[in-house]
Image (cartoon, rainbow, N blue to C red; front, side, top):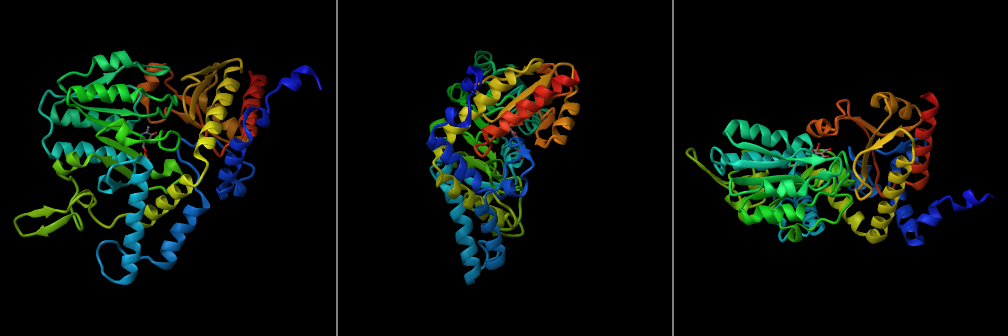
Length: 420
Ligand SMILES: Cc1ncc(COP(=O)(O)O)c(C=O)c1O
């Protein structure tokens, strides 16, 4: 063995035994990897894989106690209602919200953000000329929702500048003033993987009595989230990005604000009293949950969160951090690769390769068994800043990915050099 070979990092030189054990136990819980042994799944920012416990919990609900919630008094309805509300409590605990009444079920991050935007509009919170601050790196869900509201209500959409590392904090803070009525910022960029300085932004917004909404879609699976420490007014995320089911999301909101808001969707279960003239809305959280909810997936998310809580979370987080660093450094070492973001990010890394069209690279990688994402990632304003109209290649990892997978991707990209 040569000196260079001896120095090559390996899984066991990078990670501690605890970190490797935590990773292996975690990965083992996901049947997807046994069923797709030839595939290297690195598209976790789009959606994450699902643990067996979640799949079993959903099947168990449908097979054994399928009944609508909060409507009937029979036994099976009682069981489904208890399981459904227990999951709400699991979410409360996961993000350290003060009360499960502040946890509202939605279809996903997108609907959570739209719920806030439309309910604020219905509540006449904004006046003509007020300002809403977003950043140029937002996912379209947290950009277009506010852009369109501004157009409709004649508000001003203020866009905090960003660079390839993330939000320009000083410039962002300077844009918050007494006209700012709402600040909507993502916790982690879905393109750059950069962790945004949301504490400083929330604090400045609070000084000016502006509401704050954090889009947590890309943070929830990768960072500890404590909404009381953050002191944001709203926090939105999707279940499917934290190993949970698709078609389900969460909106956390402070109860004093949610209580003051007028809901924008009407129907069964969100009303306590209805006459021909008017209706009284139910207490939180039901007032924002019109119609039959996504019961099975709520129960599935509860099972997922219990599974996550039972892992060695500290070791898993360290494992994922080191894996990210290895990926970043590996990509940086390939000639012709232009990286965005920095090694301080989490999960997602974006890059382009020389003059290659990103779509061609994705096609070649797909043929080699890699699932990565290419395109503009629902973040076109950011693509303008990065000056990559056709988008980037995005690799996004989770704690179940292996060092061997990262190495294989880097080798595959290195082999593309031969085509140049
Ligand atoms: C930062 C961010 N916000 C919002 C969304 C929208 O999430 P969903 O499509 O689950 O509603 C995504 C999805 O990729 C995202 O990455």
